[in-house]
Image 1 (tube, one colour):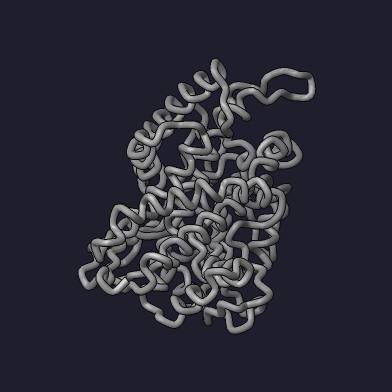
Image 2 (cartoon, rainbow, N blue to C red):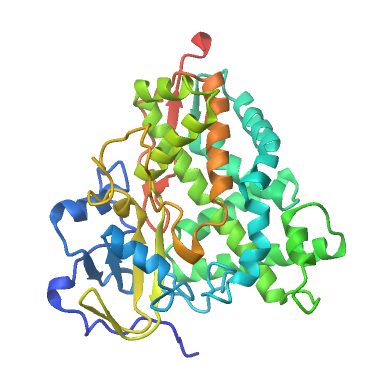
Length: 410
């Protein structure tokens, strides 16, 4: 098999732009995976550099360059971008298709995730948060990842797709392999497993559609009145599966981790429980400072960008955490200002592929935090945090986060 989208040998890269950097590797003693990115900035490495790790790829560190890469699909494609490279890889819909073709499924999905549509989900989101909290809020401790942050968005995915709650652990296992593994064979098998689940799901919804997103996708028709291509249907389901779980889980982990160490921030949110605009503004700031995703692009053709020579099929990583702390864009960027009025962060991307589920993600975090603080207003990090719980990659985060509180005092 000819691998069409593998990056070329890096003989076009000048030595001064090569940096030995593995964004999957978190050194011993590093408790925040984002620090490996900010250490690059502190070291003064080139704003555009190349690393031979993980199949070889470029990294952009400047806010303006990252935004340009998000917006210019003629150079920075979203088609076949995995790092490390793996082929064949699903052409996820619509994220993995460049404009204008991506509009077919984006127009199908967008109405399901508008602010109004998401507000209609709030009752369920709140009930889900409360149900999870009732399982451990009176115990005075929890592993926030295992007990809440993993289960909440994954359960929401099951609800939106019309799947039974008892399949939650199955989907958690699939997601963890997809996001954590760097082994090519394991990754390839995992993708096959995910698609097998999606195939069964969509066939069942095709035969007996309901009032859920999976049914809406499989019963939608193109402009000629025909069902969309079956592979595209599966690829759309794949995107919604992988895009809505790990990012929300680890965004929540970062936010709760910060609040556990900052009494003033906890009070800030408690004082605004009934002020959704101020509450959401503060969440936006924590999403800025705690951007967990490092997104991929593939170079469409040989070209020069900011004086650097790129070759066709070169991979590029766009670290949102670095862009969101660019001092040319954000005043005092390292300071967390929960009343920051102007917040042009790129946590959800920009341009044609901006995250279609961003409103749902924000609402999930807001509702969860509101219900948490009503039941557990004061909490701290436990002293015995699990070892080796931090990880890097396309989504950074924690495999465990132990929190503790005085249940009798709540």
